Length: 564
Image (cartoon, rainbow, N blue to C red; front, side, top):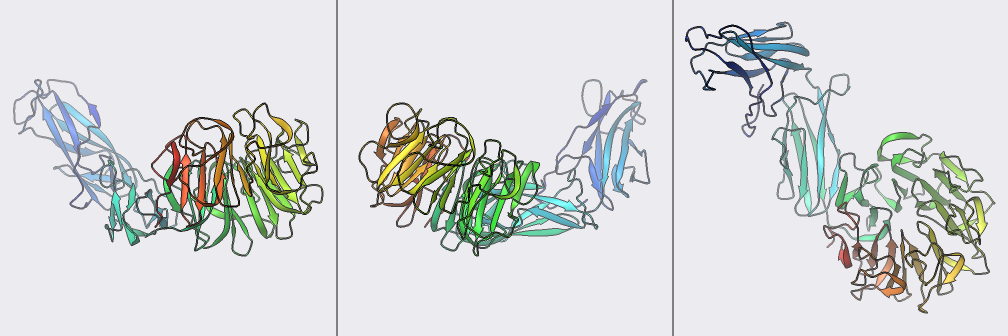
């Protein structure tokens, strides 16, 4: 087997087999205590490709543990049709399979179980395309395919990775031995590069685009964020446990990664385990976990999720989507509300509690102008400004003066006419006129008022006039018509952005004097898009990257990595 000059020759101690007798080595008269096969393979794996060779050697030791330099070693293959071994320890692989190779000195022997690998006809690297920002990084991995296109076992196989332009995007094994089938691409500066992976049998490449991003919209969720750029491309960052970043390799990313498969989105919404977007033209696509049918593709499967944007079935054209914990709701261009995914709390709004892997029409014949779903309840606004909610109601978040779950829409109590509405995990907020109201859970002040929660709308304290509002996990935020941002509720990791970690039952201004065009509250973090536009995030409780930078738990806004 041939390897590049940068491959390191490693020695791996495999199985030690000792024999019986006096152990005298022929030709030396020295007592042999043990013999150890040394495997000269870049990764220390007992494998050789069919049609290739692998050099083995053996070290013989006396009873004092001293190597016997002139000891005679004999080699034997247990199956010469699979692989033969020469008198010098050179193994020639012939056909795929396992074979025992033995080295003997005196009455001592060592045996290695060697795998002869089927030759690959092609390589299958993932991701197939990389869109990334300067300062970001992402893992890459390659698979192997035979002539029929079937995957081959990667064990024992080695590859070379190289970048055509390391000054733009470099490659690192990151502590993994050179020759490994995976590594990390590190983006340096804007530009293009190609990452090439080469094995003794085949080669493949991954195009890399490193770009600075100008965002026009932002979406937050539990620990995943997504944004759209001024070119309509979608980027996501944060956790990727269900492949909601549309990346099949990484566990998460603290910097934006481009969503591949759809060239231009009109909107994007991350959820608890899935992400969905509306393509230019109105077709909906979803990706990520599909355990409850939340991708809307007509199937449901518990597993690793789907990393490629998948069309939502039914031929519907959507104007708005909102993704929740394990379900998704959207409005068609005519304002008809549909939902799909998990329905156990009635969050599909179709009168039942069964899951659905296809869009189902929300009951009641409603025509809505907006819809919001964060966790397990959804709310929307009708053309006359009346608000309706459905789903989980354990804390009164449906606003119907009860704590009873509803599988079909119920009107929010009162005569308020809403222009905006936003659902959190167990609370809801809306705008009527210029006054913000919230209802549901108030354990941390997320309703923006003191006291316990409420099953009906309660006006925020402070007398601030708001034009938009966003309910998050246990905090909420809003914007005035002048673009001044305020937040209230839990502030244990800085999610209120006021420079402190103090909870607040009334709105507090976000630090920095920024003028925002939009603001989104997530799971203990917040993101806001300024009018420049520049995207900022703050708060965050872990290192999984939902805030889009290496800064975790900031009490003031921090720029998301990769912007001009």
